[in-house]
Amino acid sequence: MADNINYNEQTGKHSFFSTKEKAWHGLGTIVQDYPTSKEALQFAGLDFIVEKRPLFTYDTENQQANADMDIKIPEIEVPNFYATIRTDTEQPLGIVGKDYRIVQNTDAFSFFDGIVGGDGIMYETAGALGNGERIFITAKLPDYIKVGSNDLIEKYLFLTTSHDGFGSITAAFTPVRIVCQNTLNAALSNCTNSIKIRHTANAKERLEQAHKVMGISNLLSVELEQIFNQWAKVRITDKEVKKLIQLAMVPNKEVLHNLYTGQTDELSTCFTNMCDAVQEYAMASPTQQEVTTKGTLFGAYNAVTGYFQNVRTYKNDEAKFKSIMFGTGQIRAQSAFDLCTDFAKHGAHSLNMN
Image 1 (tube, rainbow, N blue to C red):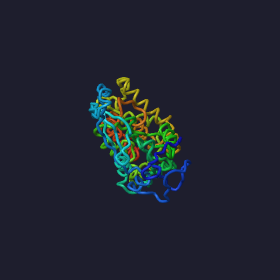
Image 2 (image 1 turned 60 degrees about the horizontal axis):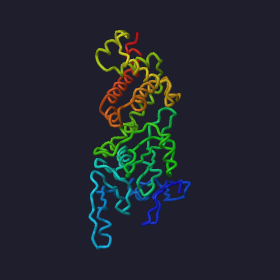
Image 3 (image 1 turned 60 degrees about the vertical axis):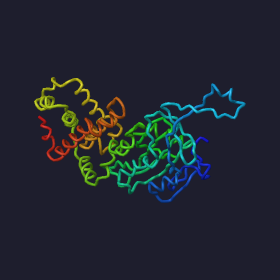
Image 4 (image 1 turned 45 degrees about the horizontal axis):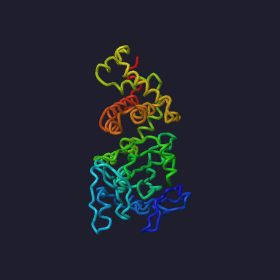
C-alpha cells in the first residue's frame, strides 16, 4: 500500500492514530480528545522496545560436507555490525554499526513533553511505517506565542526517527499533517526551522534539548510574548537595523571600537559579509515579510537568531547544535536581545548613531 502504515499481525491493528480527523487511508485509531504522550504511544502502536543484537552467519565451507549428517553448522559472529529488532514481534528492522545508539519511541516523545513539562502538547497524529523501522509524530503546541497577526500555532511540529540505520532523528515545523509515508516525505521537503540528530551516544541528550535549538522553549513564556509584541510595534530604519546587526555580531573589542569610531574600512571582509547576510535575511526572508515583522525591532532580533538557525553553514549538525546552544550562536542571540531591549527603551541613541 502507498501509505506504508505498519500492520501488527499480533494485535491485528495498524500502527497509526489520528485526533478527530480520519486520515485518507482510513487506517488506525481515531480519538476525539488530544491524548497524553503515553496514550498516543499506545493508540499508534508505538509502545514497543527496539534492541541491538549481534549478527551471525554460518560456516558455509563445511555446510555441504555436513549436509548428510546431523551436525549443527557453527555460527560465525559478524564483527562491528548488529541487527535492530523490535522485541514485541521479533521483526528485524535494519542493520547498524557498533556506534549506533537506539532512541526508543518513548524517548522520541519526550522531545514534545520536554517543551512544556509534559502537559498541554496536542498530539495530532503518530504512526509507524514498514515493519516499524520508521516512526513519525505531529503535534501542536499550546499557548504558542503570537507576534502581531502571525499565528504560528497553525503550523505543525513533527518528529521522525528510524530504527534501521538510515537517516537522522529530525524535528521541524511543517504545514503538513503527517498521516502516511507520502505525507511524511512532503513534510520533510517542506519543513522549516529543523534540526537533525545522529544516532550516536549522546543522541538522547541532544533530543531532549532540540526544542531549545529550534527556538521553541522560550516561546511559551508570557513575559517574552509581551516583549516580542512590543518590539513588533517599534519601527526601526534600515540604517539602524544594519548598526544593530553589526553590534550584535561583533567578534571582539577591536571590531567594536572600529564600529563606534566609524572606522568601517578597518572591518574585515569576513565580518562585513556575515553582517550583510544577516541583513539580507532581515530584508528578504519570507518569514520577515509579514507586516508585523519586517521593519520592526522584532524583525531585527529575529534576523540575528534566524541567521544562525537557517542561513549559516556548519560543518555538521553537531557543530550547529553546539553553536546555537552553547557557542557563537547563543552569544550573538543574547547580544541581539540586549541591544533590542535597549533600543526599545532609548531608541537609536542606544546604538550611538550619529
